[in-house]
Image (cartoon, rainbow, N blue to C red):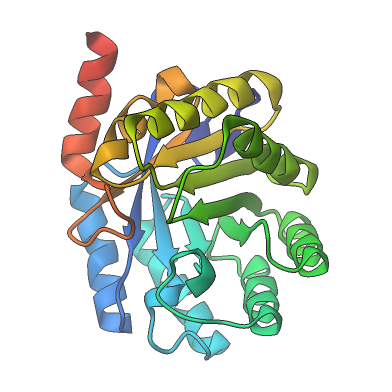
Length: 251
């Protein structure tokens, strides 16, 4: 697995890097949460723009991204609009998803762009190309909040993401049993060995919490942890996450 460096953070080596989501509904909430990240062991910030109530105003979205950059300094910023189809806070059609993503691909304030793998294929290709032309890294993603596919299907999806131009490939699934958690981790181990791009994998909910902690062993390059408000089921508070990551390695 190759390493990827964004600003001062290298992904794909050592313990998983901690990503803390910003999930404010208003500009004030968003900027307030960003300021709090300075007190947390966060390696990168994810702005979940689908939570922002004025996300349809692309100029305002860009302006907030620029303000986030000033607050966060050299911390890498991941821009994510999680669609309702994949568990996000807002509904968005394919055309608007493409328009917003393409606009943010050209925004100098962000470093990484989340692209959902199974949106319209032509739109995905356009977004990936625009992101790369503008020096952005693409985290291609897929989320299943109802079940955990087979190991073969998980591997197929992550492999597809790499083929579509992902700089990092991410998948998050919901376990119905501990065997599902093991299935996810098995797919993660396999892809860590077979793919050239770093991967990000997690089993959601309380049952899947172990997958968020043991990324160095299963091959996951990033783990998502919360400040105060979790953006997905099973997220652990960032300070606790840092402690568990470091103590698990020492053990």
